[in-house]
Image (cartoon, rainbow, N blue to C red; front, side):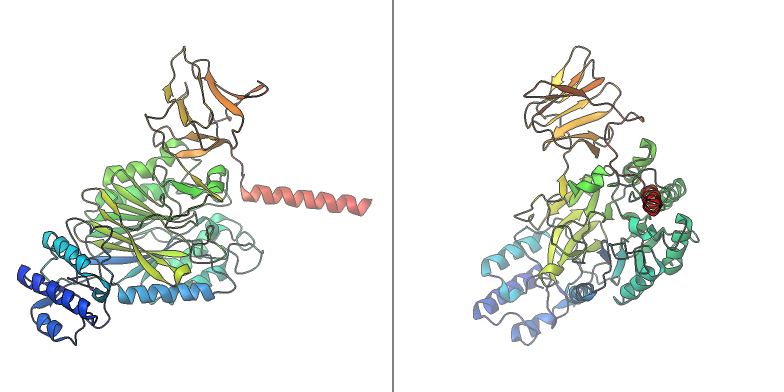
Length: 547
């Protein structure tokens, strides 16, 4: 790479040691670019220049973050993705700290021979105001974190299914093939080995035998904390229940014990916390998610738990200064504009998938994150569906809380199978904190939201009626999935929710659930559903045998 951030296999990473050499080197690059021979160590210009520069590697920890792994019978695409990541790690220099991120049109990964004189001039201006550090310091070797969901997604009730011993064995073999130190956390499917294990505890114990971290972790527990270079503390949080879930078995659930451990770790560290979990926390401000996760109440950590538990993660983020939080679960593209969220000074990063059977939008991707001393965080994507191309997504100055998006969102994002969330705003057309004499109705296709008299928050957008968490304004679930031809009204001092047909005038009172919430729990615990099917099958066999 050029001017201290050169991407080249034939030249070590360099920094310019004085403004004069910086200018001379830029002129050299311009001349060599115009001649068409680029800038290589064989050039007489570069050989003299190399005597005036020194090697540099910022104190940086590079972390490869794998989203939902979901291994398949045909592992060719997974193996190809692993090769993509290996090539990226061998060719990408460590990010360089700077007081401000580079302009979006400056590709610091581009070989200098491909840049125009105008681009080199712009880069010179940037480097004059944002010089590289001059003291050589050691760099940390790359690490890998897997966000879980290791086994195949389709359950066949045989070894290799998600959550089985064989799936853990195969995942360990695959992850070991990266040749990197790694840590793993559980995803919801990692506890789905119901044909092999009768309890969640047994399933967790099997997982932990394969992936017990050598970092600071309670004995036999699947969560951990690891100190790394650059002044960072990586923290992995794992879901702990499937069979015992209150509603959807696919809710990512952290026990009180794990939450207490998490807070204890945060309260005692002097390092910058970076967190990894399978699903994101409530309040993450990620603006795109799977609609099935929202409808089933399993989009966020402890989604269906009581508010003190469901909101605890985001409160800890604010209290202890967590700077970045990586999650998977949604199987969606990094190119979607809502795949990065910023809230409470923390960057929330959605991670996609690498397998063709688990992607929900055709994109197969992996995140690479550089954590630099001083608080600069660089987020990259390896696009496996594009032959392993690497792009810089964003640069986050965690000290200032400033996020600069480098890669523009996908031009065609589509909307099949996923939901764009909306955070209520005071400027919305019919926002209302109801008083006793107010009746509020939603105009056609309007964005409206209301505080009910009991504190519940409801909102209309994109033709749906949703319920929001009253503290974080995160969407909790769907109340009415299709409002076409309907008018929503809040009457009786905000205590009654009514839906009226615009043509017939017929109305329906939308009743709250037993717990006072309004959003509908469309999916129940998987164990309960399987037991019901078992009883139905036995009844059918009985009556067919007696007929």
